[in-house]
Image (tube, rainbow, N blue to C red):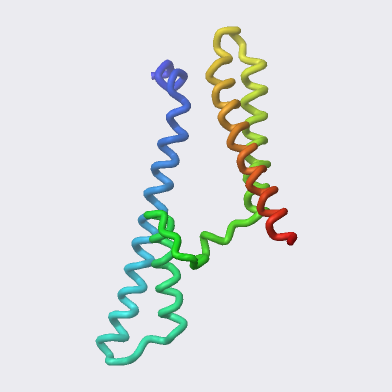
Length: 144
């Protein structure tokens, strides 16, 4: 059992992403269900729901649709407001993780075991560079 964990420790990361993704979808489902229950209560009482409630329900539905299916109809929902700060922060965090993998690849004990760390480091460096470019584009785009 110890060898299994030592050989496949990296599987913890995709499994964690799947678990947290499922948890996020469950919370979105419960939020939508609560909104529908509230609207159903207004409908059974014969009252018109407040405009603010309808705006919140519509914004949540659009955000979920954009996130799930990639719709972009020009509206900027809560999760779509990402600019230069978000991109540069993501580049910094991803770059720090990439630096950790570069160090791990340099100081791996056996000489033949450096390549998995080096591969992850190369991929994360490319992702960090991409986010940095996006952040710089956002910064120059909004300065005009």
